[in-house]
Length: 189
Image (tube, rainbow, N blue to C red; front, side, top):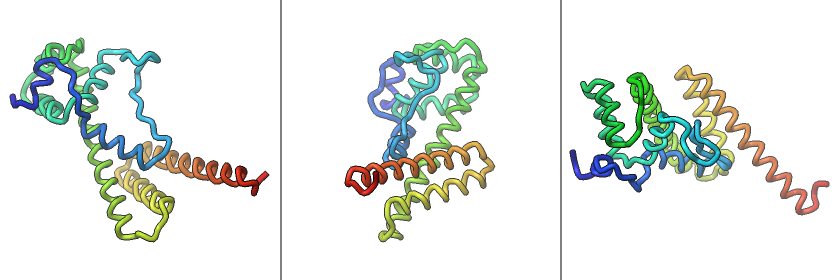
């Protein structure tokens, strides 16, 4: 165990956000109205289940602590032993081994999404540098087009539909803003 993993071993709540949380903030900057929400959360902000509590806690862990758990998930330790460690170190009581397996899959997919968001953010910067004369809306439209084609290429049609919906919402938001500006200046009744 290294020094960076002491948060988790001392059952402390870490203060630094994970890479996934940072990537979500990048997406929030690119898309007005983006709001990150954890499913299963009760209206008062409390987690509804142990699995949801684990997902919320995971999002709060520093990257080094997440790496520690990723290493455990990839190790030869039994799911039962990992479940016990989660109970001891994170104070979260998963009752079944399949919950650990499902959470491990959740982490893998979350990591894939974070990697994709980082690639997309780099692509935006590169595209902006190569096309300094384009407007923000033109750049955003091109990035959405590329994202749509990428997810269709992966065969993830649900995600493709979500990209289309996000782009449509963003365009509607832009049109509403322009309409409001026209009404405010008396050009539209």
